[in-house]
Image (cartoon, rainbow, N blue to C red):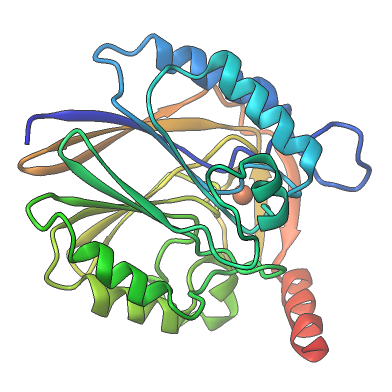
Length: 284
Ligand SMILES: [Fe+2]
């Protein structure tokens, strides 16, 4: 395998601008156009782009149409691999991309070989849930894909990163659930997985997780302030993307932050999320 350059974008949160109470904290369409213009300046150019979910802010058809038109007009002509996140809807995505995914009752899992790398994209979103986990059959699908192209390194893409701190079950909404994390760990053990690319929590973060690097990108919406995440989450202005370089030695990810003033856009109290999750549990 020769050196391979790619781009990781995430949490695009593309939206129409006319919805009240939607908590859209910035002009995400402008950010996507900016990122594509920067990607077009890259030398070496990327061989592919992955987008790890929250493609739209609320999963509606009009927002997916905006996404499609920006991609058609601005994206460089390289493969673009799309993952779904908790803000997406399978119905909306299938309507916009019927050639990619035809059955909204099923998660959108897919894979491709490109440039000597085996890219495996999994749908960790669960309809109407904030956190992520696997539906029936997804781990079996992953096992089958890992068994293919055994000579190639694997790059995994999923909106929700593995849970790295099981001592905070109250924060399970930030990641894959503990059981989904464990299933993933068992499944990929012994395989040449050079990295996992994720989003969801809107900050640049690298974890070394049972020997596998997990790269989370801040994304295109608003940046989580990492300084105090004890009881609330402050969302600041701030966006960016990341450049990945896969080499025989492993994976390097270089973050490309856009200029940021660190202005507060919104404070999300964890207690509000806990009440929301409790209400969802009670409704089940
Ligand atoms: Fe997001």
